[in-house]
Each structure stands twice: as C-alpha cells, then as structure tokens.
Length: 260
Image (cartoon, rainbow, N blue to C red):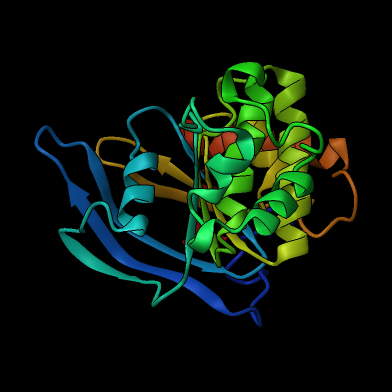
C-alpha cells in the first residue's frame, strides 16, 4: 500500500469505532422517473463525527438527506436511526420575517423556552441580536439563527444541506469553524452535504463521494486532519481537497473503499 493510500485509507478501519452508532444505511436505493436518485448506498454515522456527502450536481446528495429525514422512502435497502432526534439546517434558513431571531428559535421548542433559545443564540455568537428581525440581519447572521434553531432542539444527528453555498468566503469560513466547534462540544453526529470540496475538507471527518445518475458511492475517504485540535492544518486540508477531487473525477481507482 502506498503512502498516499495509507494516509487517506477508508474510515471503516480508522474511525471512532467505539462511539455509538446514530445512523446506518444498508444498500439504500431510491430511483425517480428519468433515472435520478441514489443506488446502493451503505453508510454508518457515529456520535461525534461529521460525514460529508460530496459529488457533482445530480448525484443524489439532497435525496440522501431526505431519505435519512424520512421525507422519502427507499425502493430498496434499510435505514436505521431508531428514535434519534434530528436537527436540520438548509441553504435558506427560512426564518419567519415577522418574528425576532429569538422567537424564530423558540418556534421549535416546547413551551417556547426563552432561556434555551437565548443560550442557543449566544452559542453561535449572536449576543445582542436576539430581538432583531431577519430583515435587519446579514446573510451570515440569518444562517447563524438557523444553526441555533437546529441546535436548540438538542439533536443527536444534524443534517446540513448546502447551508453555506450562498455566503461569501469569509462568512462561510467562520461558520464552518463555528459548526466544527459546536459539534465537538455537543458530541453530535452530522451529515454535511455540499458540492464545495473546500467545505467538506475543512469540516468533515469522512467524505462519501458520489457518482451521478443515479448517485452511486465512488469512494469513502477519511480526512487526515480529523481529530486535530484548533484550526485544521492548511496543508493537510489542501491535500485532502485534491484527494476528494480525484475521486469525484473518477481518476483514481484506489479511492474505492473496497480496494484500500
């Protein structure tokens, strides 16, 4: 086995194997008319790790999230997540414009828990903006409200569907670091969907690379920067970006999990 193969070996041998399993997908297939969808997806997500789903447009990334969330049902295969609590963050945070940031968070809480809503907003850096309306908030601040709302539910598993794609580079970088910090502090499991290889390399511990039409797993890669304290070393992140790109382009057969 080459040094490169060793460094990026499949996480099925190198992940946090003693952490509780939050989600298991076995042979999951969902095909829509026209051939779009996903086929033969196997995936395990454990507590405390961020798993990225990455690939070209049309590879079924968002379909996979809808299946996990129960909004779609597989044609074949099994999805097991028991009674785990789910939180969701989308590209558009879908805040109600007539409610303040605090009240938008309170909407998902029983008894409109003001204290928990404020704690969640403070945890994502929105002290002083709790009573602002969405129209008065920047795009990055609105997405922070969306993240706070999802985390206020105290989920076991957080689903994130291209949440930063409409934001500028600097805001996106800050929010990626925020999510990584909060996930570690709360010991969540996360599935993070993005078409941006830089995002998955910065945030994710493992990445499932999907081919398209229908979406099939091409590779499952472990990030060598996973587990590093503080900001991840730029060199490792950059090398991992290249590795994910190679797998997406199909130019490196050894990227396949079964051959590493």
